[in-house]
Image 1 (tube, one colour):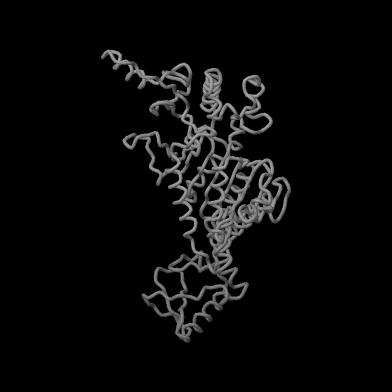
Image 2: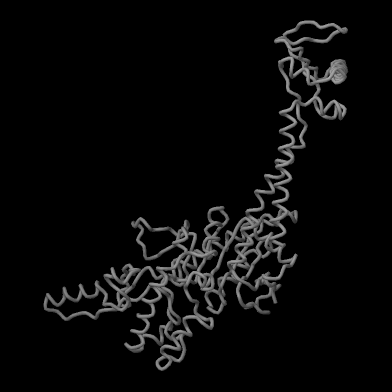
Length: 456
């Protein structure tokens, strides 16, 4: 049985898994109806899902709510077919009113970060397109402006979408309107293409042709998938990409280059989706981890060696915790850069200065600087810059000042000066910038530690 954790429990092992997922470079996401529940769209199999609602409303005609989505049952009679069309029209309107949720925005953020290889969804609500993902739609012609080739597609709807209506007889497609007020054609209407062909034949005095009915372009139980070969080609390509990553020699480097297959909000009872997860998880076991997140435990002993971690909890909360790690990393990097800048050796102001700035150095400090400069000059190292309040620089030689046009460099790094000399050698603006940089680094450090404590 895969390692199982409860998302509500604070566990160091779970925090390490979230951190490893957040630092991964490539993701494949498989989603089910559970990610759209918080968007106002019910799932199918829960106690308040669509199957239960259909069973309570039409229990006399259907043995279970699943039968309404079974192609071998629903089209046996005109009564059950009409019920199917009414429910699908109602579901289409709910999908039109819904907005993308946390998981949809999480997948979009993966795409924006360049880490999303592909997102496979069992959902037919079309919220991935509303979230801004490039959705593969086989019903769009290549000449259409909305056509997305599968190579550039970020989301693959495994069971079709509610965006189109198809004829059961001639397979012609039409747009499924979102609003009933502007519906030119709805589910259950006669196919316009079939009607036009039949009218042409009748005008010629020939026998009329049968007319099909329009149904949503979704895949039902017990019917062949019309685009199974195209989807199989995409899955094969993604498996090859996952397996192409070479195993790194170092453990830390291998963690940074890991692939992640994340499965959200599905019970994995549909055979096609179950096979998809197995293929993706086993494409490259050495560099791929598979994380299953759902409200209820699903993976048992049969998933050993396939699913690495099973997390029981809200999928929205899981995505939020991963996003927190993404937000922490830039703050830690900024804090490290600020702290490095605050503790790096600083130079004394070089060049010509006026008498007031030069007076900030005491006589003893001037002697220390001059002595250090003489010592460095004898060692053929950096020379000393000493300002005398005038526009020209002067070189100390034999205790006397001699005019020269070449400025000399004073060794001004902190190790070459005593503590008192170093503190007095910096002018007021430099000391102030050091204090500000140190204060900023401490603030960023406390913020990073606070975010880490929240995540863990």
